[in-house]
Image (cartoon, rainbow, N blue to C red; front, side):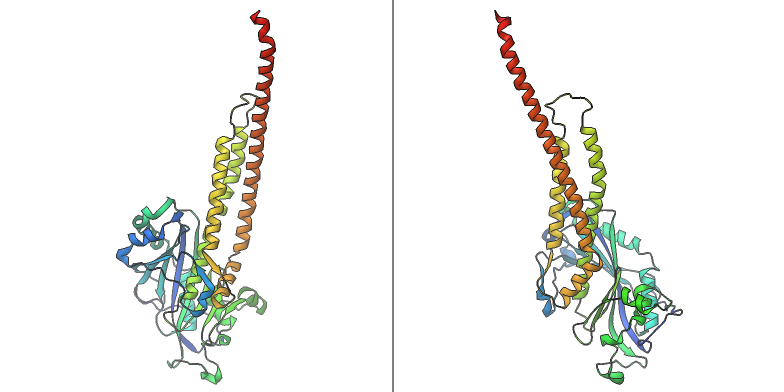
Amino acid sequence: MTAVPPTSGTLPTGSLSDVRVDGVAIVYRLFDVGFEIDLQRAADLLVSSAPARVRPIRGEAQAIQIANPPVAVILGTEPVHVPGAIGDAEVSARIFDFGGVSIRLSIRAMPDLAWSEFSAFGNAVDVGTDLSPVFERHLRSLLARIAPAITRPAVAPITEDYVVFRINAVRSAGGAALAEGAAAGTSPLSPATWGDEDLVPLLLNERRPLSATARHELLPHRFSYYTDDLTILTWDNALVVEPSPGDTDVQYILEFANAQLLELRVYDAVLDAELPAMYDRVASARPRRRLALLQRRFAGLLSDLQALVADSTELVERVESALKVTDDVYLARIYTAALDIFRGREWRAGIDRKLAIIRETYAMLNDESQAARAEALEVLIVALIAAELVLPFFLR
C-alpha cells in the first residue's frame, strides 16, 4: 500500500495536540455462515495456515471463561488505499462455534502521526473507504476451505461492523517517547490526559466541537487498568491505548461481543420473518368446512414450529454461554459494557417475546388438534353405537 498523507482539515484538538502516535485501525466485519461450526475440524482444514485457539492472556482474564475458544487464522495481505496508511493490510479471521465468522483487516497508520492526522486516518478507514469487496472475497475463500465443518451452511444477509483504533506508542512533538511523570507530571499515556474533545473527531467523526453534555452522553464508557492503558467504547468503534504489543485481550473481548450481537440480530430477524409466515400457514391449514375430522391439519406446522423453537433456543443459549464472566475486573467490565452498548439484553428480550408467541401458537394449535381428534372419536363412537342398534333390524 502506498503511504498517503492524511488530510487533517479543521479537526478540534485538546491536550493531545502536542503528541504524535503510532497506531493501527482494525476493521471487523462479522458474518453468520451456518447453524454451527465444528472448530476442531475447521482447524484441521486450515492447518496449512497455522490456526490458533487463543484465550485472553492477562492475569485478570481468569474472570473470563470460554468453553470452546474460537479459531484464529491469518488469511494473507491485501492492498488497501487509505489516506494516512502504510503497507498492505493484514487479513485474518476468527471462527466461532455458534456459526459466526469475523473477517479482520488490520491497516497500519503511517508512524509518528500527529493526533489530528491519526484522527483523519481513522475517519478515512471507518467511513471513507468501501472495504466490502475485500471482506466478501476473503469470506468466500475461507468458507470454501471450511465448508465440511459447517452445519447447515447459509450466509445470513445481516452483518456486523466494528472498528478498533489501537494506539501502540505516544511521543512528544519533538520525537521523544513520553513516559509516566513527563510533561508537568502528566503523560499522554495517562488516561486523564485523553480528553473527550480530543476523541470526538476520531470516535464520533465530528468536526465541530460538541457540548460538554453531548460528549458526556456519547463517550461515557472509559476503562483503565494500568496507568498507561485506556479503552473507550462507542456503538460502532473503540479506542484502545495499549503500549504492550502482544496484549490484544481487549480486542478479543470486543470481537467476541460483536459476534454474539450478530447471532442475536440474525435470529431476531429469522423470527420476525417467521411470525407472519406462521399466521398465513395457520389460516391456510384451517378447513373452510367441517370435513375430515380425523385429518391432522396442523401436523406439519406444529412440527416446524417445534423445530424453530428448539433451534432458536439452543442457538441463543449457546451464544450466551460461549463466554461467561465470573468476576467484575477490567476485561469483564469492558465485556459487560460492550453488551450494554450493543443492547444485547434488548435483543435477547425481543427474541424471548417472539419465541413466547410461537410457543403460545403451538400450544393453541396443539390443543385445537387434540380437541378435533376428541370430537372425531366421539363421532365415531356415536356412529358405532348407532350401527350396533340399527344393524340387528337389517339382519332379521
